[in-house]
Length: 419
Figure (cartoon, rainbow, N blue to C red):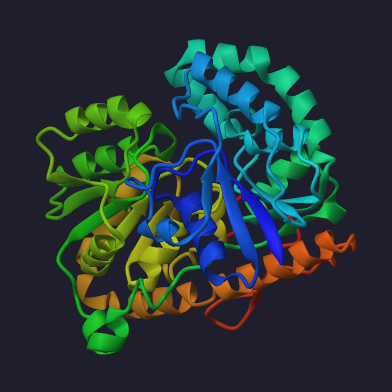
């Protein structure tokens, strides 16, 4: 069956792009990916194997007011080609919904997050603190955008959210009723990330590693990487012997943030690796004692899964998506967003280097609970139902943890609840 897929910009090696590529690679349907900004040279190589159409006019990926308003108007005026497609899946982080204004196909959504500066209070608070002018502008256009977005969301016959955290944002914003929202986790390719478990064996992979701590993923202000640098600085004052590697993609709008991080890292045992390949990321995950995941309130977070697939423990902020993937004290630690808490855990991990094998094995098992095959099969069935004019049967969302218990993610997760 032919189907259309839309995402506003495909130009980085990030979580949203990973989801798109895995769907294109694994689906039984014939997809055309439409976007208003495609950069093959800076995103995953695998997109070259698929039908990707860049729509005109091209939109900027900058987030200043002028380019953002231009992107908003351009997407809302776009009439997608149908080309025999029978359904449209919109991959949305906020602005993607606008393509529904002139789309005639029956539609469903895979939501990475509703527009975060409006619907996530942690991101909004950080924006107000760091850029009050931009926060004021966002607040000024917020009511009009919310009203338009709410109308467009009525077009979605079914909505998949990438996590329970994202589901809560959708419901909290009143964008869709609970009967139309379903949590559908992304996965991790444990054959790609963690292949050395098969090559070298579990004993070798569970052995002590050098005191390398990793920050991976997109380098942008929302990831709060300053927290990792502040934690390392505090830990050094108490005998920390490790080093920090910051590895990730950087786009044009985030280069000033990268420059500021380099300044803050002056004098610290920190190195930067920009735009690492998947192969290099696997090297880093497999070499690292642990991953530091410092985002204030991540939507889901594929990076912790990739790290756990390689046997790296995860130190993550106890908020958002990591609560749904990281098992506290078993595959890593969920911590307050406080440099002292992270510094103390860094020292603790360094001290228990000889006893990390148990966590490495548990982390690897946890990653195996998240399957791309499960996600893509569910999307395929839903797209077929929408194309046939049928309702999408809603499924319960339950994920087994590594002890065999069941984590039911249909109900909200209370503050402080872990696992």
